[in-house]
Structure formats: structure tokens, C-alpha cells
Length: 282
Image (cartoon, rainbow, N blue to C red; front, side):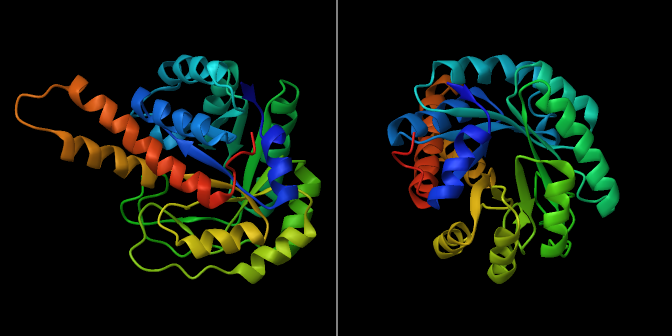
């Protein structure tokens, strides 16, 4: 069943677990994520990001994902991640996405506030929830979701988080505490004290971007300190590619590989759902 962020994240925030966003670019990945959610009886957030649109356009993905989500017996949020342009975000809303992220994190604080507040008014009028980012989550060299350039994160300032939330009315807030998009080259050093301070100052579910590659302990500590949504792409993307590579033999066609790819994505997703504590929360 299709729902918004508010219908899954408020309970996660209250009960100290997290719901995963698993970005997908094709049928095999989407089926794997939703099969995991059904088996685990877990709420789930599925979608794509603006930077991933070269691999599958919104017009191609939206009918596929909405059809699968409608049939699901668990809550499914259809989320457009890291929307960078109002044009794409408006299109995602028109095509049936129930949640959007408007990423203005590289703008000044005041510009970020103004832009996000305008998007919140637009989306809420259409029954769609909005996520924003304060501070800036960096990107590793091979990231598909960032700039593609190694950069130091600009950490979220707790004092600004409260002002930002009150000024914009966002439904979820992504914070920068030392994570990166893409595969980590070295162990990240996350600022959990900063995260706990932010969580104590704002009454809104917090989001962790750059989740792929973090240790189990990192996830547990982040969730214990206020994270209610975790974004995952690299882990399931590499699981899909590995399944295709390892499953291939001379003479095989794509149809011989599809089931294995879906199963690999399902298993990788189940691992994260168990870790996030969302199993049996649907």
C-alpha cells in the first residue's frame, strides 16, 4: 500500500528503529526490495534519485513502482531522493511519488530555508511529504549519488537545525554527521554527539544519507541517537551486479540471471531491515 513518510517515520522515531530507503533503477531491484519488505513485514521506502535518472527516467520508473507498491501488503513510501530541480520534483509528484527530497544543501542557510519552505507548501497541498538536508553529505570518488568528488562534509549545526525545521515545516531532515555517498575508502568517523544534540532540539524524524558501508555498530548508534530513516543504494546495487557476474555462464541470456539478481537484492535488503529494527513493524 502506498503511504507517505509521515505514516512510517513517526512510529520509527517514537520506537527507536529506522526505515530504509532503497533506491532502485529497474524491475529486478524493485522486486527484490519489496520481496524483502513482505517477508520481513517491514515498512519500506523505495524510489530513485535525480542523479540516477540517466539509468531509468521518471516516466519509466513511476508506473512500475506505483504498480508494485499498490499491490504490497506492507506500507510502501514512493520517494524521489535528492531532487535538485523543481521541474523534476514537480514531475515526480505528478507521476504519483508520495514523498520527495528537495536537496538545497549546497545553498546558503537562508536560501535553503526559502526554497524548501516553498516546496513544502507545494507538496503538502498535494498530499506529499518533503525531506530536506541541512549541512552537506559529501561524496566518495565513485559515488553515484553525489558530486563524484571527494570532499569533506559540512556538518549540520544543531542550533540551525531547530531554526530550519521551524521555518520550513519539513517532514524529515537529513543531517550531515560524517557520512559519505558511495563506497567508503576508509572507516568513517561519525559525530554521534552532534546527532544526539540535533535530535534533542527538533521534533522531526532525522535521516542518515550515505548509509552503505557503515558498520553495524554505526547504524545501531545512529538509530539510538535519533535516526529514523537510512538511505541505501550502493549495497544493493553492488549485490545486483555481483549476482549477475557470478551467475553468468557461456550461453546464458538475461532471463537466466534475473531471478538471481532479484534474490541477491532481496537478501541484501533483509540484512539492513533486520539491522535497522524495522522487521515486524508493518
